[in-house]
Image (cartoon, rainbow, N blue to C red; front, side, top):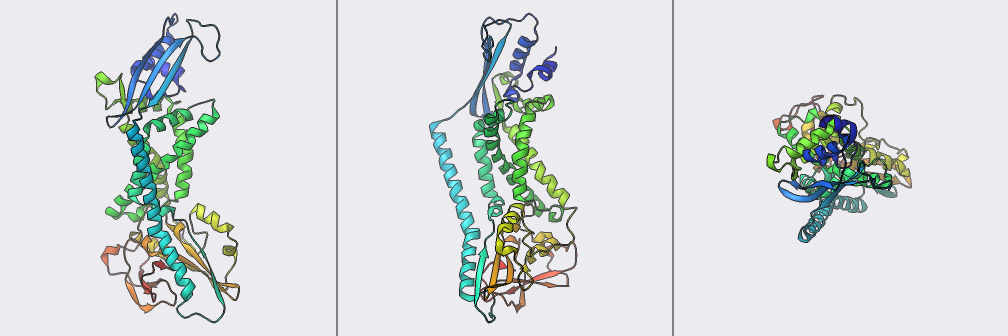
Length: 441
C-alpha cells in the first residue's frame, strides 16, 4: 500500500493530521501497513510550528506499543499514537497580548461613542427641547426613541477589523487546538468548545469585506456589489467554519492541500522539523471571505424592485427581529411613516455608499411621535455619516429638526457622484435650524 493509499484508507480522522510532516505520515503508515511490523519501543518525532518565522508552538507525535484506549495486555502488534500540541507562551508576550486586547476594546468603545451614541444623545436632547418639527402642531406631544444597532459601524472600521484579525493570529496555537477539537468524532463537549472558539474567524470575513470595500470604491464598482447583512455573515461563518475544519481532517485532497501549504515555504532540509502557517492563514481568510463575497455579488444582480425604505422590516436580520418585539413599532401611526430616504439615494447612485460591502441599515433610529397619547408620526432617522460624501444643500428649509433629503428629476451635474444607476435623479439636503445635527429623514 502506498503512502497516499494509506492516508486515504487509514489516517483520515486523526486529530492534527493536516499538521503531520511527511516523515510522520510515513512512520504511521509503515507501522499500519507492514504485515509483520512490531514495535519494540516508542517511535516518534518533534517539530516546531511557525508563523512568519516566529515560533508559536511545539508539536510531538509518537507511537507506543499496546492499546492505551481499551487497556488490554500490551501487544507488539498494536500501537497507540499520541499527538501533543503545546503553545510557546512567553510571559512577556502573554502580557503584551493582554494589553493589546484591552487597548482594542477601549478603541471599540470610543468608536461606538464617537460615531453613534454621542449623536443619539444629541438627538434625544434636541427632541426633548424642540420637538420633532420646527413649528410644532398644537397638542400634548411625547416621544419614544428606539435606538439601532451600531455593530456595523465597528465592523466597517478597517483599523478595528485589522486589530481583531491580528489578534486571532497572535493566538495561532489556540486556533490550532480548536481545529483539532472540532475534528473530534466522539467528544461532543470538545467539539462544541472548538466551534465556539472558531466563531472568532468571523473577523476574517469582516476584515476581507473592508478590503473589498476599498477596492470597489477605488475602481468605482460599487454597483457590482450588494451590502451583506453582518448578522448573516456571522451565522454563516460560525456554521461553516467548523464544517470546513472537520472536512480538512477527513478529506484526503484537503489534507494534502493544507500539508502542502504548511511546508511549501519551509526549506527542504527543515521540512521534518518545522511547519510555516503564513499561507494557511491567507488560504483560510480567503475561504472564509468567499461566502459573503459570493452573496454580495449574486445579490447585486437580483435587487428588489419595490422597497418601503421607511419600514422597520427594511433592516438587518437581527434588527428586524428585535424591532418586531417592540410593541410601539407594530402600531400604525395616523400619518404615513417617513424616513430611510438615504437608502433610496444609495440604490440610485451606489457611489454615495460609505461602505458598499456591509449594510448600515441596522444603525437607524426610530422616533415615535405621540400627540395626546396617540401615535401620530413615525420617523426613521439615518446618520449622514453613512454617506460617502456630502450632498449639496437645498435652498429650501425642512419642516423637521433633522435633515430631509429632497429629490429632483434632473441628473446631478457633479461628476464625482458618478452615474445614476436606475434613474436620473439628483438629491439635495434640506437644512434644519441646527446644521450640526447629523440625522436625516
